[in-house]
Image 1 (tube, rainbow, N blue to C red):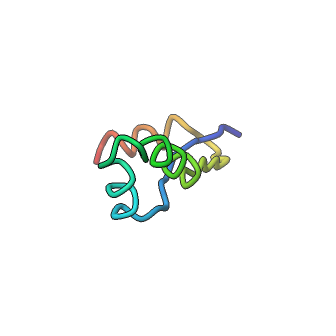
Image 2 (cartoon, rainbow, N blue to C red; image 1 turned 135 degrees about the vertical axis):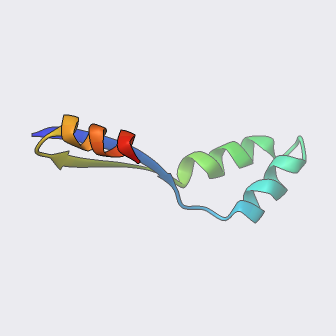
Length: 57
């Protein structure tokens, strides 16, 4: 079994923009972005077949 890793962000873009617009709150924006980032790992039988399917699209 091979593993496929993907990243998804589940946050509010408006909150991120407001936090990043001011220089004072920029570190809070980075923390907000990183705290809403998810790492999803899935086990697949054949990673090369999945890669070929994704390249074909």
